[in-house]
Image (cartoon, rainbow over all chains, first blue to last red; front, side, top):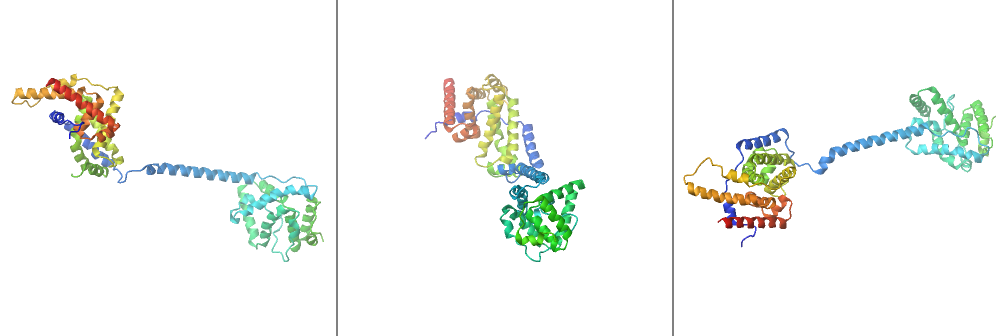
Length: 254
Length: 184
């Protein structure tokens, strides 16, 4: 069977043509280049696949993206701490009007939902904090203060009360921690004015319940003068607030 | 160094320069003739021939023995020739150079001038006939005769389908037969 694409006679004649070969100098140049290629840049034993070729650029892009995301996240958190809304400057006319003061407290309540150790120093001024004059952090209460009546008028404040209660239950290290927190604030802020402004803002953001808790704690420690001042300020800020009967005797001036 | 072409190429990829020498020795003559008879200009053919081997050297890391080494080598050669033709818009070649080259006196004259003259005349006719083929048909014929490629391998090396490669071969052989018969 003869293959139509083959012709033995033509092949025979073609092979009788001059069998040209490349010049010797060309052979040597090519072989020299082949030697040089493997000596200067040996080929890998495993041919690079597409995945391996893209590995380095892909890793570089991943690192850059991660860096940008972390930087943006840090900036966002920083700006959140610096531009928290201030509470209304004048006290509301009624408890219903006092309710809008709750959102900062609600925001405050959202902070402790994170892991406690992750809370930043810049966010802490929003938490209830005693006046800098005294060691106002209340110790463990001897008798539990009734909390139930407080939950109804200000349900949103209940969340904020929990970390406060937890803070009350914490032993001695708390003031030191706060001192460290304050140091970090001062380190972050260039001047003392900024720290004072934050402190004032924290006091303004204090919810009525926490305020009353603080007064109770002051009376329990025998610091009645400070408690009276705090009560007076409380009445000035919340003139319409109805103090629960169970708490009244622990709060009213003596 | 022993082994198949593919084994030698893999050995060269692994850093054994001696494997390339063996591979080169096997293919240098056929590839050189393929290039010379494709471009018809000796100096240019040498340049292209060297380029082809340089491409083989550079492409060693990507070499995968999925096909015969010969097919891979002549695919590179085909691509290099196509580059050359596109760059210089050369698709046809003159017969004058081939005739002149074939009629040049050889360095080792034979003792039988009459017989040598007849042989040279026959060779010249065939060379002229091959050179007169259209480039695609000539390439298919040279790949068959010099590289020993099958129709499928010719198709793979030239980027054509098998039917086209088969057709080019048939036309090339028909024209060569016709030329040789007419002059016989």
